[in-house]
Image (tube, rainbow, N blue to C red; front, top):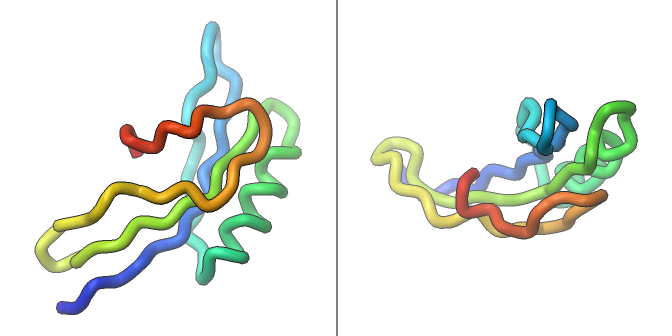
Length: 82
C-alpha cells in the first residue's frame, strides 16, 4: 500500500493538576484540521488544541513523526508523544 497522510485536530483539556490530550478528530485536509483545532480550543474546559499531520503506510504500521501545522492556546509544541 502507498503512503497516506492523516490530518488531525487534537484538543487539550484541563485535568486535576495538568493538561491532558482529549479525543482526536481526523480531518479531510490540513485546512480542515486547523479550523477544527481552532474551534476545539475555544470550548469551555479546553486549554487549547493542535492541528497536525502524520504520514506513513497503514498496512505496515510504519509512520513518520507527527508534524505540527498550527497550535491554539497554551499547549506544548512537542508532538513526540502523539
